[in-house]
Image (cartoon, rainbow, N blue to C red; front, side, top):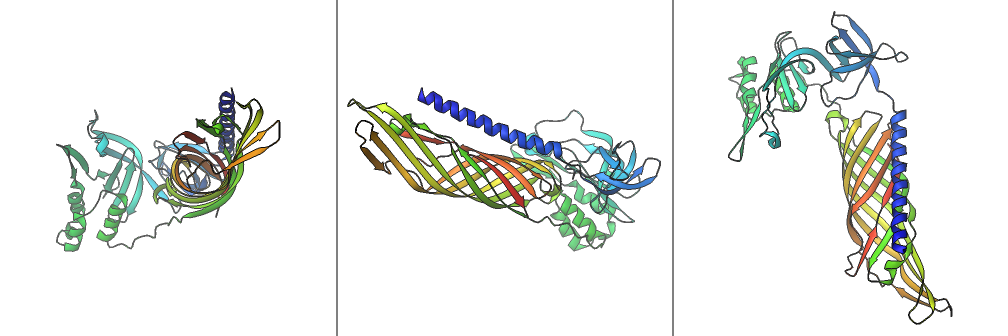
Length: 421
């Protein structure tokens, strides 16, 4: 009966924890703001209009954008059919283009799946990477990157790159390197350029760098994404259960609720302003577990058995996050982290009180725990108003006990509220 009550209490705590997380995230979604920043559109008739574009830092090329002439008016949606192009001032520029897309996969895991259509023609917004009076470089990103060279206004030629597999070996087809020399024939005899072409990758940074070098153009300064330092406080909610052949396994344990202090840094990827994030973090908190039970002793009297375990915990963790909703001022993410816990045990004692005589016996440190132990946590969170963050973690695996005869099962939930500097 006691074990049933323990499970019921743990389930109730989990439900409350899940409800709190859901409530917090739904509140953020309701109050989240669009990211309208200065930009301009060019309509199909050729009319250019300045205003504000809802900038979503697109990981894939958009087919529709939201635009308003002033911040206090309603937004209008414009598709590829409506615009010749648009520009987010100081950030990105897109042009409407009729392009042919190579539909063959380049991921090794997808090579065995051959698409029914290997070349597809579409009208889409392509993002401008380089442009001068002579030539331009553009990208269209869907399930892979497609790069296009435009030497005339209406011509967009895809640079050809492919990956194939034969007898377990992977081969790359770098036809795009020879294609580039057709646009810069004067560089065929330039040893420096040809050496650079030999190692050129089918990547945005490599290709953009080549175009600046080939055209003798001074490269633009790229926006640096600085790491974000954060710190905060929160609450640690930890139901506790012990199973096995020992007196303490039958006790009714109270859920530990204690504060936590933490600090860390988010190291973000360059493209898409941190779609993927590496997060080192440090935390400090206590865990206070207390359990008791009144039972009949085999000698014929009643006794109260109590077990108290109190620990101080400093941990360092390394996490990986993905911002699946990613705006400069609002983000929603999920991920996982590996945690190294350093624990000291302030109290670890079992007391038995004879309720007839009042006599008490105490066993100190009868149960042994690890001072250094590993856990893996799942985590989710959200950033709002750029500087404030709420997050939640739950321990998936790991325990501070390696004892053979009993199984110690601490479940650790953490709710955090932090500030990002």
